[in-house]
Image (cartoon, rainbow, N blue to C red):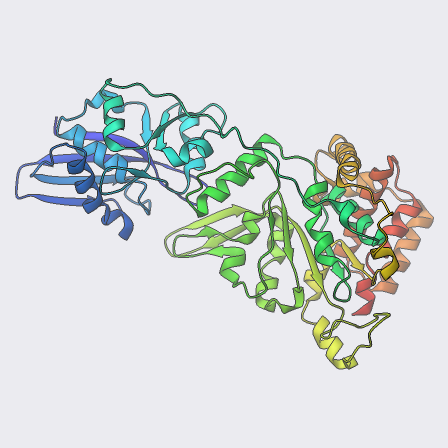
Length: 500
């Protein structure tokens, strides 16, 4: 047999399309050609595969080798095809039985001594192989993370020689299991925050409804501290949400541990991050920070310091929950359903409205500073909260006991259960028709809302967000109908609009 076919998986965003590695050995001058739109890393695999086969005590066929990666129009990148190419050569040269490769898929990068090194995209490959009911062979370092996919069969391979012994029936292997150390890491507790009752209340409302949140206030008021506590009061991840998070993580790096896959991500990029780092991109597009924050929290500290062009790129993902990246070779869509939390100072010096320090900024400087945030971006933020400095006596009071995150999370979970039972989505995801059904207002309440829209200059989008926040406030109290106190509190979180 001079022809063999080995199944593998390419990496296309967070998907792993099936690739057939076809190997043909023919007579002629010794040559080794790889076709099928291979990238540089794939073309370089020729030398890695040759050395790995010879150092694993197999014979290298000194004939004409042709490897085709099908389908030919799918870009192939990375070292993930080293292992299937090597197995294809061994099977085509009759050093491996071809039936042993049936219903099995292989990914892995080969070292020169035949050792298998981890690759990216192992979770997506495991999802794809489980749908086909195939066994997936991955490097040993990728096995634990790939095994978190339900219904999949993962074989961990450490060396090419050991793997070939199993394929020949000379050795036994055990299917990999998820890392037993995969547990929820302790998140920073809300009880550590002294004072700031308004900030804690806004954080609870944001968690209950999945709302976006902006903290403003002088330096040292606890804006960042509050934001970092949000993951600790969010509900636990559902199994499907965990898979989405791990597929995104493994698409960016050769993930070798499932640690942290059971909790919601908290991404806090620096304000010097580029548009590509935040949104994603590259010649072969990869997810950016907003996709890595999927099902979790994206926190932007010092919000006005981010380039305005970068901030404006957040507008579409905040509405649609996904981001589409178009390049010459392909167009990919990544999920980006995150909670947006940001923090900023009220002015360039940071002390506008501070009770202890005087502001050095002129009114024009303050206006230019706030104008760095566009109206459409602010429209997409549900809660705009101004924090003031906490008195020193309250900060140093060791006797004060604050409510821990665990008890706040219970209320958040109950509020989310009410929203999901009523509409099937959390309140931040209510569309216009659902919003009209769950937020029926009395005539006098509707008139009050109309007056508030005129006074605060709210757009229709901002008005809808006020109603969604009011619905979350009502759910936290267990109220069936939307009442005026809920509406008044929700309107109180739009005061930043009137300062513009």
